[in-house]
Length: 242
Length: 290
Image (spheres, each protein chain N blue to C red):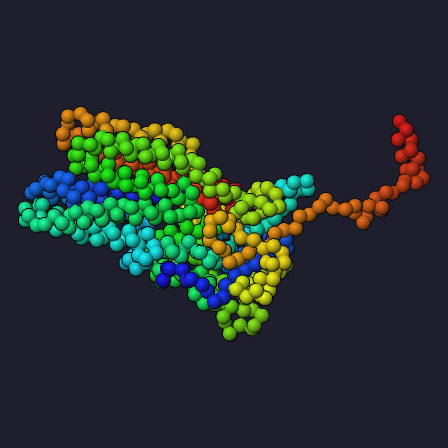
């Protein structure tokens, strides 16, 4: 069970566009909302001084010092990358952690999980969190209960984070199909892997933020060049001469 | 990495226990009568106490038996098998020594070797984790095995036990020297973690969440690093220096009773460092190498 499939027919995953992400945390909220069904994702001291909880998606923000250009703020969503060589799967002693042969989604069978935490150690990306109440491992499921759910309208059959993103910074699709939207995005925008040297071959790709130059002169600039008239003009002239 | 007491106790106690069981199994000392009961009892108690401690680390221990299913891929599952088979194989030898039954020692030879295999599987649980560069090195299993050999040699009163203890000290120094360079050598930075190195040099602008989470608690442990040098010296003295000296003195059994607990205390300190000093690459996302 915890042996990785040689190949998967589909490679379902996400493309995350760091150029359009605005860090609104809507994906974090939508993910928590959808996945908080059943046993759900517990919180500890949610309204207290030290709130903590299980989340499958977190949004970081970075300040990037860009050579010869102003610094940029980049907001950065981080969730499971559904790696082809998923180290979290092979370390699992019980077979609870597995990668689906049909579509490559990495899942946890919570009924078999002993909560040893080894899969979370093995993941370089911090994609897995042990639920403090339930003692079992939680991770992104790519919303398997949405993408295959025929009770939902077709437009809703994508992960909650993708469906909710107000800037369309998240895209869901099959990377095994070179003509899919996600494959084309990666090809045209230079989509990349996180920590490729870790040898995990992530399925999810990130699109780099555009390098922004210093802004051109503002279109409002001529309006700022106001000449004072009358008494103010006289004052301006006199004070300038002192 | 969070130095959980359960895991530290598990790996040190069971390491020493399986080390001692290996020597008893190999027949490096063959006790008889009640002596056999006590000595085999010490070996079994250490090994089993360690394994019990490990279960306290589990969030959902009711599924523990399922850990025997994935031996093809998982070192943790292999460890479960190796430990149980070792304990079962050595049982008739222990019984035979205690009651003077003079059964074949062949299961002892095999079981003794499997005891060392068990220690190796324990070490591989950590060694396999590429995301923790300090652990991902062949010196990790060498360190675990050297502890087991020195512990076993000490408890079974081998004349070369002092040398074995000093050997562990040397291995520890090597582990620390190599380990201190490991994270840099792995070459991962906040830039490669986020891929923003293609744009410039990233630093954290704002934390991703208000308070702590599982990742910060479990894998981004940064407390206590400032005392590392002192702890290393304490560990070296307790693991190697002091017990090696005691064992050279002609104290016999008393020497062993003094040296072994001190060595074990040192092993606990060294194992605490093994976890507390280990940095997981996920810390890079948080701007915390931890």
